[in-house]
Length: 181
Image (cartoon, rainbow, N blue to C red):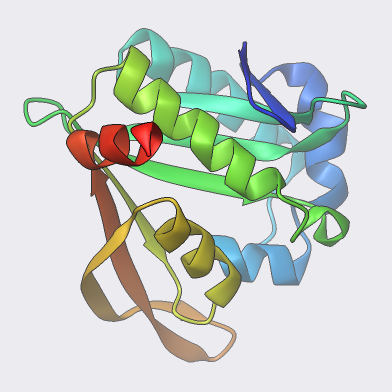
């Protein structure tokens, strides 16, 4: 397990399924994830199992996010391969319940994930994609040192409209400089 100030990251487990299903199919949550259609319990169980295989193959590292103080489920996050030779991975973070948004859990999770990526996996570059309307997330990413490096125009379709995606990234040496300051 990896600990931050507010969160603990651990392997995803089948026992997480009830907490996942409580919020997973909420339309507002799905719109931020880019998942238009609801998913069944069985699909989510298969997803959890697939995360173990991806970790064993070195292709991705998925974690359940737990509140450090209460041990309650918050969501999940991931680091997955973009280009193994270049040591470049993609980051994703999903805090499920709206009640837990804007309370510092996402920022702490990002710090822990960046620490794992740069200090344990020796990654060179970590990227993420975010919708321009997700101002709260963009603010956090910039605060952590991510830089906007590109945009996919009208790359996703959700709720009757096409949406752009913003590409942001951070390099290992940029993280180390920020960590020391």
